[in-house]
Length: 241
Image 1 (cartoon, helix red, strand yellow):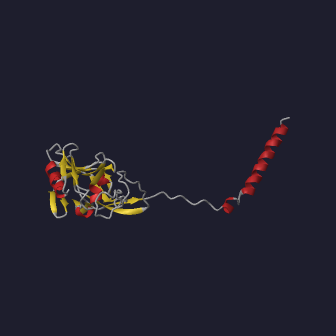
Image 2 (cartoon, rainbow, N blue to C red):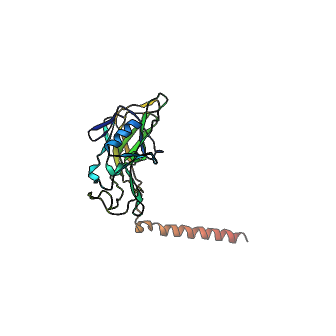
Image 3 (cartoon, rainbow, N blue to C red):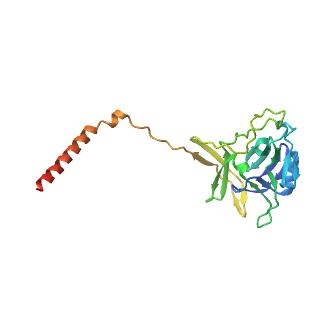
């Protein structure tokens, strides 16, 4: 992964990363995640081991975008895509950043980022095991946003429905997407960047039901054949006596 940045602030450069559907959050080296959440105005919460942000007095527009550059491609997460809002009106809301610190390292001692579900939900991923590479393209769910209670982000123009953390299920129509491959390392296996990988998403097409008039054209012939068969069986039965 080439870099991680918050607006014009560089958080990390030339780092390792893996894409993991089994990880919910986006995890990174502690020092880098601390800098990232600091740029978001986050405060570390030792109980949850996550960073909280003030979404009660700050406007949504005051939160910057977070940018991941992989290969030659830029992947952007907007505030509502990287904020995890929990609670309800009676207990109060808490807003967490989905960027979680961890000092995990591979067998060579290299620290790495884990691009979990909060990233992968926004970007369609292709895992090319044969060629040891992974590709990303903007997901059909990229623009979906959770509804936000009116008590949050008071000066923003967000919807006023109760907050829900459930991600909406969407369906895809037939289309062709060009997926740029990324320079990324999984353990000790380097995924090299070659030509763009083209993926076609196709929905099944069901043939229309034939015209009812056409479907009855051969019925008289079928009825006649059935009549002949009955006569033959009856004749054979009578000959047996």
